[in-house]
Image (cartoon, rainbow, N blue to C red; front, top):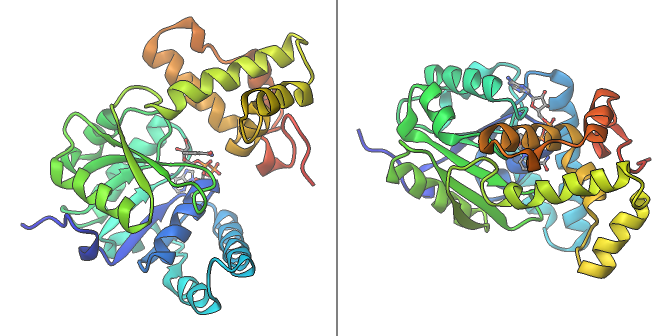
Length: 290
Ligand SMILES: NC(=O)c1ccc[n+]([C@@H]2O[C@H](COP(=O)([O-])OP(=O)(O)OC[C@H]3O[C@@H](n4cnc5c(N)ncnc54)[C@H](O)[C@@H]3O)[C@@H](O)[C@H]2O)c1
């Protein structure tokens, strides 16, 4: 059986998980000319994603980055099936569901049953082992990590991760798709948190410790990092953008996987997640959002 390696051989892309990341990934694939099936187990999430994509495309038209014709064509390429089984017609699938290894393993096993055997299954995981996800999927050679950055339509980077059993054709396809989307792919080894979150999350965690210990207010901590270190946004505002639940899950993977106490999630981060203060997506995190 011939496996597709070139992005041109991919027509229909499945995206599972229509949250912050899944909606952005679906938008980018649709903008690049692919038909996209965006599935989420929560019907409300599908609706919110459709609205978010509509708003995002309208903004690009306003800015002059996109024509109205491309906007309309992009919207026409997107569908929001209510049943995961409808992804059986997809030539490539990427998952962006909750950062939970068991949930992702169960989903990949299900996708293995639904899709053709040659279909590459990508994970947008921020930290979880691609090797472990691949092993659980039933098709380890065709499982690859494609770690997009938030917000996906604006951020040019994708970390590409091969698991222990990922074959070169699957990795080549993922790389070609990144190029087609206009993204820059950077290879990272399959270690907890890869490159981006191995470096970013300890900084965010330390900022939360500094806040908890009263070293500075949230505004002071973020201002120091923006004006003093030239970061475009402070670590606490960035944590709000990422989602505090996502940050906590990633720190958990770093802590368990690397076994070093320096990755211990700050108790204040845990308390905010327990309180449902998850950042922008709930309207409140370290800062408040209207
Ligand atoms: N938020 C970020 O900045 C960011 C950046 C890069 C990567 N990621 C990764 O992307 C993934 C998604 O993160 P997010 O921030 O978009 O999360 P999110 O909470 O915004 O969205 C997750 C979505 O997945 C859905 N879902 C959960 N289980 C499902 C299942 N079994 N089947 C179908 N849908 C399911 C939920 O209903 C929800 O809509 C995670 O793996 C995360 O680590 C996040």
